[in-house]
Image (cartoon, rainbow, N blue to C red; front, side):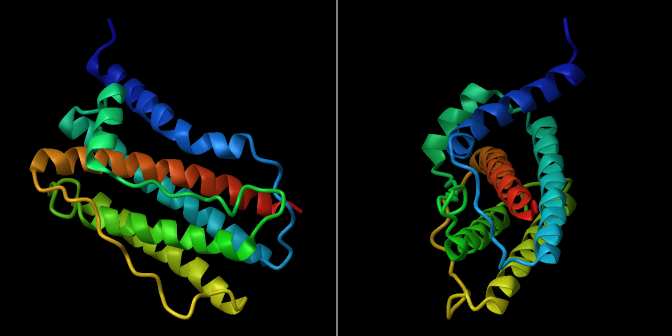
Length: 204
């Protein structure tokens, strides 16, 4: 029988696969991305570097949440996802042959902005998790700033910065723990899509 050290990573992988599935199917069935010659290569490479950094932060947060609270059963997470109403982000303007560049960049920025706000609602969840959570929020903010600055340079930025809508209420400690796992998992799903989009755009 496998010990706890073996079971925890396996449960984490199973959870990620289950929660990524709903987000990844749209990309898997989409047509290849068209060229985006108006985006500088330096911008795309910087974004790829930043998305990998955020992915690393997110994986670290997931692993610590699983190890601390022992709540990585995929079936339970799916039930909690529906009951807590943790939102997911669409990138409908990105994975298509007729790429909507303005819409895609705005969705990338809005998604990062949303997850930054969701992660901020988890502040104080655990002193041990605070450094990892703070670093993740900081790296997401830097990534969002990079995209916003590029939209401004291309004249694509909205007149006003977006504002966050209402975030899910997580009044109990248990709900915040489960919410933290769901936010981290949804963020990783979103980042998988972002990485794929940026990788295709960066190809010659």
